[in-house]
Image (cartoon, rainbow, N blue to C red; front, top):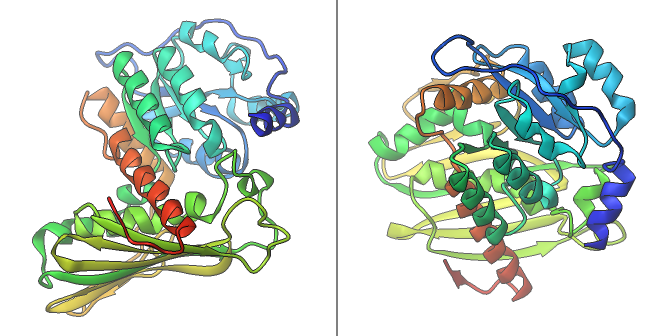
Length: 360
């Protein structure tokens, strides 16, 4: 809790911004786009989500929630955000009275996801939550319950499941064009000379497994179309002076029904980005499999999976917006995010037990 308070104080989350209600979306087609408010104006919001929202067809950037007043003028100039749509972390509850905002996108450190996703749900707004969904499975359940209670949709920001080549891989899990999957490998990591400070803090949900490891973990699930039945894992670090609280590298093996084995690796100290699938009658891969662009691959029959060529975040947000507008199921619901965190907790438990095999 002290670390959380320290983060909030350092980020200036207690400082004020103004808020007044304004007009909004009416179901029935009078307004085509949903209004999105970004919560947290760090790298991902600034460099990726906000620009992507300029490319979307069904939603648009209308609000911000920030603890850094110095950022507000630039965001207002660049995106035309009204004073009445600017909030801080103390008055965020007031967003309930703002009909201009339909969706609240949580883009905070993992350790703060649950608190602010629940605030958004209780304000009656649909919730988009960045991955990983939360720090614990219990927090995930609390978010799901809050969204259900308030009758709002919840979507987790697994952009890869909205990407075309990834969707092909997901389809192959059902159609099995190369026969039964026998084994697969998935790895995601980068060699970080400098790492965002909160990602080194256990209380904030830092560590390679939370930040990058959910990519290969989620990939094994959508690639097989199944849920793992057992896990074994170990963690390590080459920089113990930096990684005093969290994992720098985590290696984990997942067992799926039918004897399918998945070998996975994630790291803040190694660059890797691949998904390889071996089947009875062939193979296929994506390299890279989780980059912001250029996801591509090949199959043993000569099939080439060319790069998607679209902004992944824009496609993700448009898909999620359409689910709201048409009142249809979202592509990556909270239950999917919860399943990953249940496994993440078992991965850390196995690592603490020197790689002991644990059933799921």
